Image 1 (tube, rainbow, N blue to C red):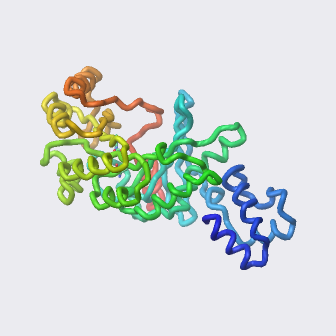
Image 2 (image 1 turned 45 degrees about the vertical axis):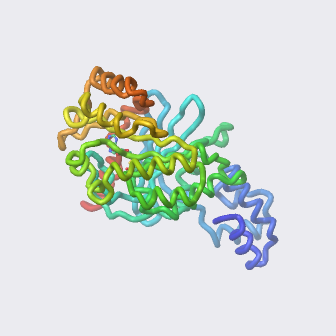
Image 3 (image 1 turned 120 degrees about the horizontal axis):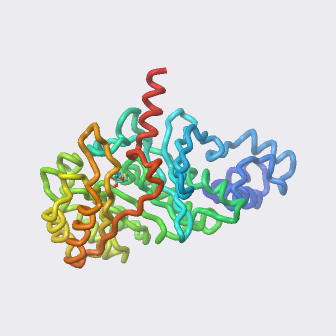
Length: 345
Ligand code: SAH
């Protein structure tokens, strides 16, 4: 609940308006989600608030937690009050903590290599459900003097199909009295929903855009990402480039490397051609294998060769640092397994 709404609700219930600021401070600065522990409120107030409000991050139950062996990545499967489950990931980089949040429970986009769309109904998450994922982690980090300083909307779901809630959540997290995360440290990743990219431009915030490209041959991209039939990748690149120019933020193109499918030198040449002269960088991602569907990781030599072709064309490119590879089952797999279990119960 935004501060001004909390103030209004409290005023209507006959409480002092400044109580809203105190509650806000407990919830979003100190990450205390239990009204009983808000020591500067009176007993009557604590009782009233406990009976009237729920605090969502406290209601999101961790049903599974995976820690990578290097201790740098933590993946949570969180159960929402309605029984849906979502995945959120905390990553510890040398520059701080970043969180990967989900924007929908499930996904409708049917990308061939992704597990997010398997099993379980799709629904949009609310703004509160999106930003609460950050607070689930902040609750543990705050007592250690740390906090989440980056957010990537790259968990399950297509953020552009839940535009209002995603950007409301990001704007909330940006507030200094909330999570104080700069827009430049936020990235929204899309499979290429052009109207969403255009709306982001109108919003005019310096949030970074990432585009899941993965193929630059029409037949292959149609097959891997059916959304390409509605929004062909060349048009997506044009829209993304337009966003880059208006926001001043470089676009990241995510390119999963799938052995034998999109990882040849010719593919790299094509990709370089499409991105030439653009404010672009490429993030190469060796696929999290989905052997049942025939998706395998190319060997390291192939990855390096692909990268060198891009570099020769002066395309900025990096290979995604593998974080928590030992817990990095294909995206959405935890949730898919959870949904399967629920169905069979
Ligand atoms: N719908 C948005 C954001 C969620 S997916 C989008 O498409 O960008 C986040 C990223 O994970 C996307 O780039 C997606 O293509 C990628 N991804 C999905 N399955 C994967 C897998 N098996 N291995 C590696 N990356 C995968």
